[in-house]
Image 1 (cartoon, rainbow, N blue to C red):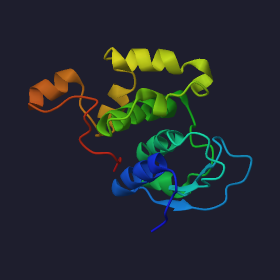
Image 2 (image 1 turned 90 degrees about the vertical axis):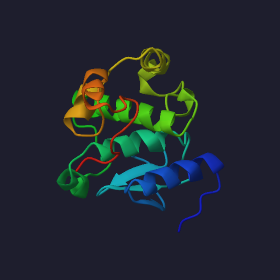
Image 3 (image 1 turned 60 degrees about the vertical axis):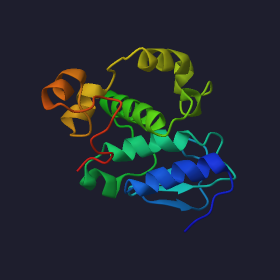
Length: 164
């Protein structure tokens, strides 16, 4: 088992590993999307010395989680191929931080999301369903209506964390 020194990094890695996404420590190149994180065939390679924001691990894990297994097997570095992928990863990240009882700023920090972090925090905090229809279609969560019909919990509660 890889040991990370930052307690938040350890907490996030434990969660991500626990839902079935492999995480390993290693050296990442400089040309990655987020400093210190490389997605490689569905595995998160983490270079803790370069990791600027541990919460970015949840966002990248969200990208992996919403892929099909065949997509995960061939994913590398830039895993956001379209707006739908990004929106699903945003919603997944929100659900994960709520599940882990973390402050929204851990994932949606001021240096991320092209200056839109505060707007995303506000939207999700006010019950926005941004990305929820995609996550529901993927079999990961239920919106309020479907949850009511099934007498289940709605987003941000997740029925499962990893797309089949």
